[in-house]
Image (cartoon, rainbow, N blue to C red; front, side, top):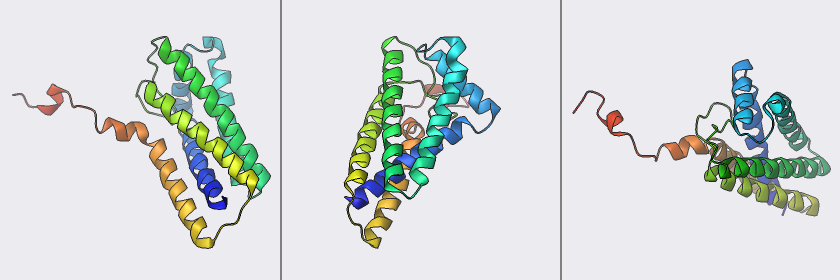
Length: 184
């Protein structure tokens, strides 16, 4: 199970790196994230900024923990990731159930409103983090070729997850006016 753990470590690491970097890319990005946290109506508006800071710090801690080449640090990082993802999922589900359409600032600038796809994405990532923690704790051996494939697969899948909203938006129907910008 060594390669599985390594692949998941890379997947979760890329997702959390993209997430924390997108939110902390500058004051404007962070302020948009704070607005999104407030707009979800899950925490009081006055708590949105401290919650946003905590989220970015926790995501950064996951990245650091997963970068340390010690199995115990990997298990801790994946466990923190699983808890964070579960909390994010619950917050998004509550927001969606209430009919709130706050933008998903999960990776920074996306204007896509929170919805079922974000819940499914986070549930899948939570399952991956739990699986990775269990696989990391179980140990196992890995061949160099297996490690290379696992790393590349994890990095690619992580990048796809981070770009999921943009990818799915490519398949959304185009508005009639957008199809005919110069008139009919």
